[in-house]
Image (spheres, helix red, strand yellow):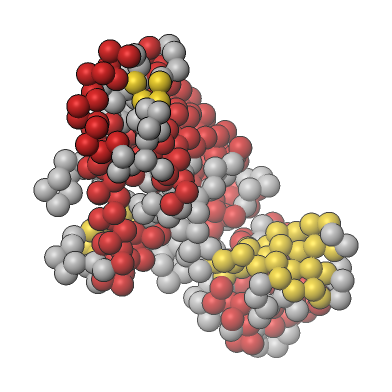
Length: 417
């Protein structure tokens, strides 16, 4: 596939066929897109690109378009041309060098730096070349080593305007090679860095084998599995919110506190991990919690179901006095505008979205926890008996069923499916 074919990708959305090349664009919450290029059904390249760049591609310079096209001869011609500004800014505030880093091309990075590209260039949000390398350059750490050798050693621990560092972005993206390189060059590790593994991307967090490898490396370096962020949440809380089951299982295996409640909010006691998993309909998390001896009592179910309904209502019609805090890259920000509150709650996935999943979570709790004594089927080492009428509660023994009947009788018919 020629560079000219790749340039045609700019300005397209969705999935499009170009001269036998299929292009699929995927949008991320921070405005970036990923371009998946296929030829005859075979994936040949995944190119990260900025949404604003794609939409305003006519505003790019000849050099910047050549970089996006991965066309080295065209890049060299552009650099040699009269009046070429190698440090010209893109409409979104980037540069040709930052584009080259995002597409992970060391040869183009070297070419641009040797032509006078400013390696200390910053994006409008304060992100610098090392931060972008930590985010995008996963094949190896050569770009990071090159940038530091050429003068960016003072940027290793420099944060962007939101407080995010290159090390933090390497952790969040499961970029272990970049993480090793940054630490080797003096990158600072903080207790809260492990939390970055469990942050949502906004369009649904993804846990990969790279994240598992990064998690295990952080543990070897002494990371605290119970580290708490500025919002009072731990990795356990984030994993449940963002539906990262594998990450949650790793935390449990390494001794994380599975009982610590979330911070109190609006005068209410914070929910435990089991409560949060129930509210969000995370049955798989409830199963793991039960293996470690933690569950939701049937007596708590009505309160938690009511809280679930209230969360949905808040998102649909946020009260004027609602106070929410968003923590991004360690910086806490007050969220008050109703529309922003709804978007915030959706982005942070703190709302139960699938009624089918919440029903499964409800059924799991009611069928594994004795409605009378609260013992779990794991504790009693036997399958519980389900109420034959409503099939909504279970008991560990006949005596428990008889003892609870007077209380259960009033709601038994009402809950019958």
